[in-house]
Image (cartoon, rainbow, N blue to C red):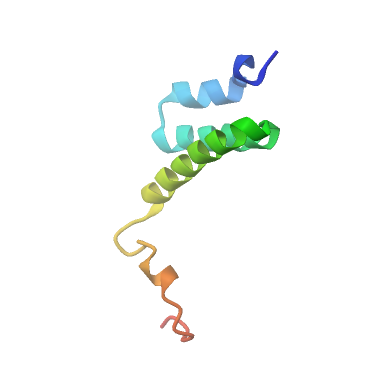
Length: 81
């Protein structure tokens, strides 16, 4: 059975069917990460691009008004007060 023909795991299907968006994205992230490990050289770039898109979406969901990542980019050597 080839990579594209492998059925999704029951856990993945159940999570997506439950309809929780963030949990579904996390399940997709996990599935893509596993597929990246198993991907051929030809397919790895495509899978990696999909994985980055899902991770980016998950980061957006977790970023609130005070957690936008700007402070992570600034490193002035001073501890946060």
